[in-house]
Image 1 (cartoon, helix red, strand yellow):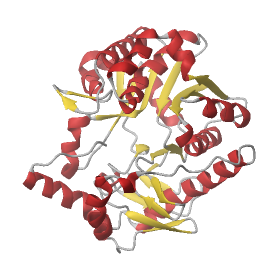
Image 2 (cartoon, helix red, strand yellow):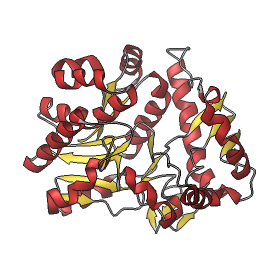
Image 3 (cartoon, helix red, strand yellow):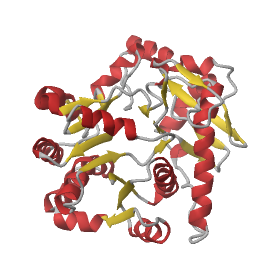
Image 4 (spheres, helix red, strand yellow):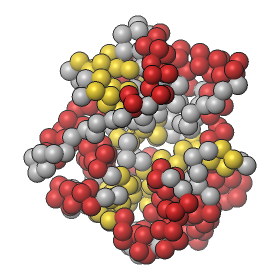
Amino acid sequence: MNHYCTFFDRGYLIQGVALWRSLAAQDQDAVLWVLALDDFTAAVLRETGGTWLRVVPLAELESADPELAAAKSNRTLAEYYFTLQACWPRWLLAREAGIDRVTAIDADLFFFASPAPIFEAMDAARASVLVTPHGFPLWLRHYERHGKFNAGFVSFRRDTTGLACLDDWRKRCLAWCHDRVEDGKYASQRYLDEWPARWGTALLVSAHPGVNFAPWNWAAHHTSVGPRPAAPVEIEGAPLVAFHFARFRPICGTWWWQSGQLDYGVMPRRLRGAIYGPYWRALVAARAELQARRPEVDFPRRTARRRRGFWRDLPLRIVFGTDWLRVGDAFVSGRLGLGRFSGRTLAGLRRIVRGSEPTA
């Protein structure tokens, strides 16, 4: 069995179920362990998840890890969730002796093809740990101040090095895990930068461009969209395995969406349709499945419009078309390709004004 773990709360229930259904479809040997961050999420997942979806309430983890529970008092809720990225897979390996390898993934991932090549590469290299690089294009390299690797897709084997790596990551995150860049650290993610030198050949940096493909790295690759159902999207000739739908949020109802691509560049229409269209259909299916048992489940109402940043960025989002209108299962930007230059333009402006960059 291939064991994966993630965590989310009620606000990500629909995305979490869509992730699980995609993973189950692409990896028949998958077991997904979900750390439920609230009681409602735990109850709903137990009702709808299926045999190979395992649910652990946050209270159970906190009871077994008092140091983690104590960390709530010295960091924000978001920073506490960053801390979970190390503590959750470490606790899982410690408790479940039958797990030989666990792959920690973010709840806003979605699988388009089998992840088997990832594990085959890991096995061939005899690696204990696998990380996925952010893979920023040249004009976005300033984002490496938040980490060269993305903590949203990391795999650990149950062996001496894999456990030692997790132990060290957990210890460091418990000591410091804040949502700011400070002394070479950033949240849980910047610690990964040290791993290649620290763990040597026991660590594999994934070379598969279709793993953890994301808004921040699509522009660095040659992509193709074809008619083949088995591989509708290819990156550098390799199939899209998992896409990271970071910052993709409904702004109003289900018709106005935040693409999350302002700081990186907006995907062209055909590529966007091949990736976000299937994801929208999966979200609709997940919502229907959940509402059949719990009618109150829906996409959360966001409060972004009440924050100053919403109105500050609105002119840029209008110019580059990074807010999308949903028409059926298509997401329309209305800028005829202009949006793909948003990342380069903003990077240049930030170099001029020396402003701060948001996280990846």
